[in-house]
Image (cartoon, rainbow over all chains, first blue to last red):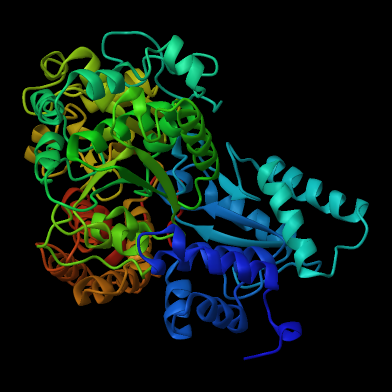
Length: 188
Length: 439
């Protein structure tokens, strides 16, 4: 076992994770809510973080990784602070989603879902139907849906986030600080 | 409250959406005072025996709105109410069939209708605990439903003695994490149990051995949202709506190349011409409907010549398609069917859980074949391959319908648009509207 100073997840989060199994008829159901907490804290799921989740839940690390790799909302590689999830399934594709994706890629200067913009602010993923087809084309960003997309609307989404990041002091280096910021966005 | 783009208002054929658009309908106060909310739950708990409730749902003829269309009352009857130990109601709120947004529409506009339906179902089948499995991307519906549950709890409708009845009821939420397969009921159960979401083989069916090994009723959001209205109006009155075999109304999500995309409540038996032209405004100026998916991307396509097919399950089966999830995707004549089919096969290949070989291998094989065709490297061999892969995906070779769905996309688009496929595969050209050749 690694020393507490070196652990990927804070002891506070690990304590929260240890309380999860009792909330379900069988403890295994806690694995996804636990991975959520881990991902919220450090932005993506590192092998160390998954091992610590496994230990906290008394599960095999390989099992936890197997669950994490199955679901698309768990990220095993670093992602941008703001990730665009752009629907390109049929209903959105028929209304210009591919143009939106091309434009976004050019604006944030990435070519694939694995890349993060050089300032660390943005990444982008083409995703399957997000269930808001009457507002196509649409995307999900910072826990919100954005509808009836145009190139101008996409530009505005990027510009707002760029200016608010330069207006603030440099982002907090402690992982916990990053997590608090994300939570604020989710609730706003 | 969420923006409405679709049905709302008080007309005889608006059962679900009748009160949509009422300010603050998402709050318990308004749901009760303006929309007659929780009257059906009170009646169910205080004035009806559980078997009577299930009987009323059977009489209504309500069929599941998730995609499979199984008779809801019959499904409720499969649960042995008197079996000892816990039983569960699990709500499928993992809406992810391409072209389908109706559960989101309900959850964002009238979450208490869903809560009420869940509580009635739980009482009817002898469950005290319900779980809502809600897709992870549905941030707003999750917030709305969480708030609604808190309000119902504060009022005592969720708790140890709802309406004074000694029958504890509870609802909890479980968030999905991005996997289309979780819409399939046994995969959903695996996921709820903290596993990779791979379908189980049946039997045993969930009614006998479902969540955490216990008897479980699984219903879709829209299905349960319809239940309060059925108890309020009576099953027989509900059954008078729609057609004999597909009674009632359902929400159709109309998307793609139409002027007024939206979620429309439609009585079964109306034609798709009515839905696409009267309700959704038809295709943009100067364009024609080329093809439509009548029930989500998994429902075999119907060409423009079949716009007068009606929305009920029987008419759609006769047209070799299905009612599915009610996602009506309309494509106009400026778009290429081969490219559309390729996009959907990419979807099925990506979402295949990998458990059954025909689906895991077949969907991917189809994608690679489409890629060769669209790169102008096709020939008769590729066309034959597509048909063969399609056949291999269909007819119950896999544990769930995901395999079949990809096969149906290939099969139905090939059947109705053979010439367009041949343009691409044999002549290496695309002759569709604005899409340039060799694109």
